[in-house]
Image (tube, rainbow, N blue to C red; front, side):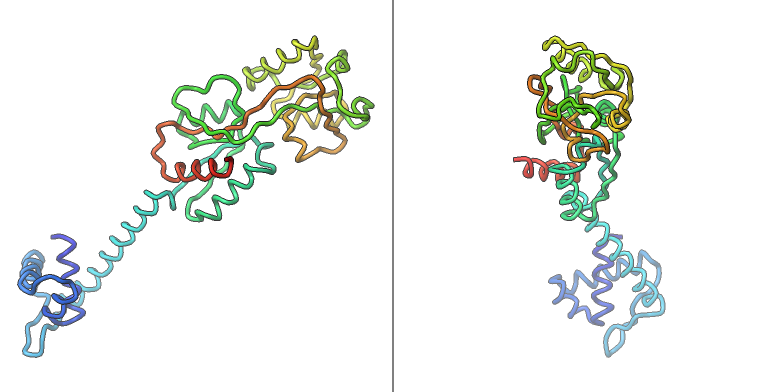
Length: 295
């Protein structure tokens, strides 16, 4: 039995005429009659009663018509769903992000516009630091993520540029340092600092300390915290200064001042990273939209 048997049967049942069904379907009458007969033989029951006034559904035919319509409706729904998924208009997308990258600007706008443009794609957003995202993308737990990439991209992961940030000095508001403008690294000697442990993001940690060393500065790290949010909370408490992502300016904590650094630069390229061999059409659509927004 094939779907055309059901389509021919439904047309004949609704029009009560092989001739009318033939005209509607653009199929010859003998072909439709033969398919109806094949269907009845396969079922083992007569679906129509042939009368001088036309074809009339039998009791079995009435029941079969209800089920046949439901089958075709489900098939049509499945076809629509498959087309939607194949075109990236429906599906599921797990995306990671570094929290400070999503507070404003292109990341927040890209997520909002994608959700508005493709409402039937479910966005599952997961805050993670960059190494956690790259590990999850490689393991297939994330489809992609907004990462501050430092160093070589892991094998099997592709990326597209989004924007570039830099670092900024965060100091307790009670300090006089930086109240008149940008500061030089020489002014940071002997100041207590808060940083994250090297294990959190070794490549960035090493680059930051190397950039400081080039300026003759060795950070006096008194406290460590695993996230920039936690680091800034310690700065707010007056425990020391910190060199953090300039994106934090978009969400300044209480009792913290952000001060430009005159002679220290650590570029932080934000990229959307994703599996190079991903077969998720929703991901393809998201990457295309993001590239247009970033261009």
